[in-house]
Picture 1: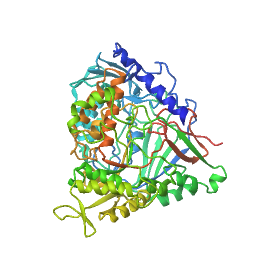
Picture 2: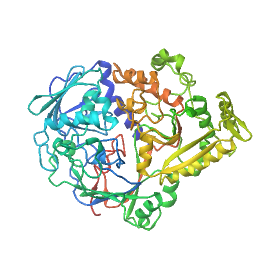
Picture 3: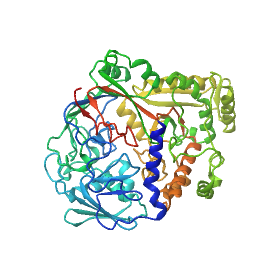
Picture 4: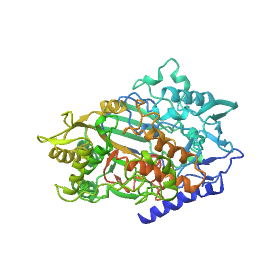
Length: 605
C-alpha cells in the first residue's frame, strides 16, 4: 500500500511539474495530449503500460448486478441504464490513460493539434475507423454527435457544448473546435465524448430512445443479446477496426462480457458461489473475511485478490438534499452528522476494519490539510470569508463518535445544533416553532441490504431524539426517476474524484445546473466560492495554484456538511475465476473503469 501511494504521488508530481515553467504549446499534430506537460508515452508506444499486448482472446467474464434496466442508451437522461455500458459500448476520439492524471492518446483520432493556449483543438480521424456495422466513421458523425449530445443528451454533456464557439470540418477528415471560454481542459474533454452513427437516428427522437434501439458505435464490444431485467450479453467484435492501434492493444480480449441482474445482494452472491458468475467486487471487509471461504475458494478455483490504488477516496455516504428546507440549514446538517455514530455503525458493517472517509480528496496529495487554511489556500478563500461556513478556514474534522450506543458527547452537540436552528424536543418529538415534527425519508435502491443495515442503526439513534426517518426502497427505474428529479430528502451517494479533476466538478458541485433534471449535484450545492475554485483550478498558472485550488474545494465541500461519510476503500477486493487474469502492473487509478474488464483475459491454467 505505502509503496503504491508513493508511486501515485511521484506520477502526479511528474505530470504537472512542467506547469511551473509555463504552458507547453502544441506546435504540430501529436499522438496524445496531457493536461500539463507532455504525454508520458512516446508516439511509437506499443500498448498502455498496464495492458498485456500478447494477451490471448477468448473466454467470458460474468458479473452480478443488483437491480435492473429499461434502456440501452447510456447517453440520454431518460431510462435506467447499467453504468458499465457507457464505458463498454462507447468509443471516443481519444482514450484516457489510467496511469497518468489526465493524459489522452488517439483512438478514433490518429492525431491531435491544439492552439498555444488551447483556445482551439483539431482532431484528424484515423481513416480506418469504422462502426460495428462496417460503415466508416466520418467528420459528419463527429459533428452530429457533439451537437446532439450537447442539446438532447445527458446533462453531463451539456456544459461542454455551451463552451464551443464553432465546430467545423477544416479539411477532409479533420474537425476543429473553437472555444468561447478560457479553459485548458476543454481540448481534452473534446476527445472524450462518445461518437455515434448519425444515420441511425434519422427520424428518431434521440432523447426518448430506450430498449427499442441499441446505439451503433465503433467499440470493440457490441450488445449481442439482452433480456430486460435479467441479462445483457456483449460480444467482442472479431472485425473491430482498431485492434492494432497502440491504445487498444491488449484490451477487450474476452469474447463475452455478460451482466446478470438480481433483485438483491443475496441471490447475486449465491450465483457467484454456484459458479454462475465468475467475477465480483466486495466492499465489506467483514464479508470478505467471513463469506469467501466456500468450496471453490478452498479448492483454488476462485482467486481472492487485494489490489492497492493511488486515487483519492471520493465521497460515499448518505447525502442531504439542501433543496429541502429541512436540510438547508448547515446547523441541522451538522447535527445529523453528530447523530451518526460512525464507530458503532462501522463496527457492525466492517468490524472496524476500514477507516472513515475524511474528505473528498483524502488519500491523495490533493486532499485538504488539517488545521487552519494557510498559504495559497487561505489566499484563494479569503475573498469569500464572510460567506464561508464555520470550519472552512479554521479547520474542520468529522465528529469522532465513540464505541458506546449513547455517544453522549456527540449527541450533546447534535441537540445544541438542532436548538440553534430552531428545533427542540417537545413531548418526545423534535419540532420547530411552528409545531412541525422533524421527519424525513431516506431513499435507497432496492437490494441495498448493507445500506439498509446502516440506516436502521442510524434511525434508532434519531428516534431517541424524537426524529422520524422513514427508509424507502425503490427499484432501479423508480430510484433513477426520483433522483433525477431531486425528489428525495436523503439518499445514498457515491462520487468518485480523480488526481486530475476538471470540468466535471461543475456538474458535481456547480450552481449553474443545480436544478437541471438528471444532474449530478445531488446535494444542491450553490456556492460562488466553489465555482470560483473550479475556475481557478482549470486555469491554474502553476503547480502550487492547481493543488491549492483543489484543497480549497475539499475544504468547502467537507465543511459544507452535505454528506454523512461512510468508510473508505483504499484497496479493491476482487474475487474471480482462476482462469481470468490481469497484468501484474497496476495503473495509478487501480481498479477503475478502463481497467476491468478492459485489460483482463481468459486462459485456462
